[in-house]
Length: 273
Image 1 (cartoon, rainbow, N blue to C red):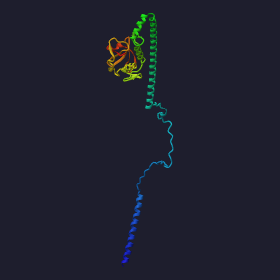
Image 2 (image 1 turned 90 degrees about the horizontal axis):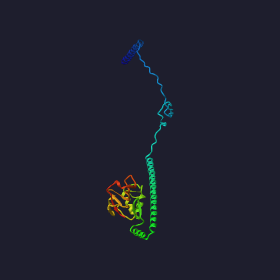
Image 3 (image 1 turned 180 degrees about the horizontal axis):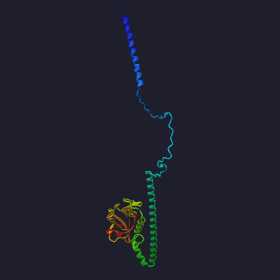
Image 4 (image 1 turned 120 degrees about the vertical axis):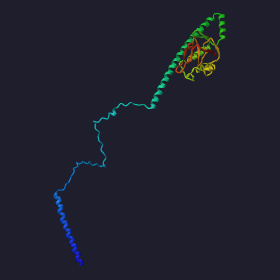
């Protein structure tokens, strides 16, 4: 009895489901017949570039019409290294030093030639005088007495008479014309005023102080200056050569030369020979 009821219930369920299906299908068809609203968008076709990552990129030639300013043709100034600049400066300094040395040598040679000419002329005059004096015994004796009181043969600088040693000292000092002034220098390669005087007098065995102030008071102070006397003023010294002239190492940037004594009025003169 129960079995029959179950069978009947299953049949009834199948019948109901079939009825629902048959009802749904016509409604779907009706919706399709009524027209469904649809929308569509079109997209432009893209040209995709295929890239093969395993192949090396080929070089692309630059456009010849493109100008970058002509870099290769620019006139770029050539610069010099510091080493090249230093080398050029050194070469220039050496050339100037050689030229100055040559000029000084020429000046000294000219001074020596002039001094030799003056010495030969003075010697000839002295020999002529001696020959003339030999004519009379009294004159000869007088000359001998005078000669015994001086050192060497008498010579003259302009109108001033000087002894042999003094003439030699002046000639020795004059040959150094053109030597550059060097502060603290004491040799013919360069010296200051006191270095010059101490060098010249030292050559004749006369020792002077190295400094200007130290040389003041050397020998005997005199009021009638004679060739060979040491000249002194505050901060400077020189050698008097007669006729209002002196030879001295002048000042920085200048050279040893002959000058007038008139540029200073307060000279002190010391006789050291």
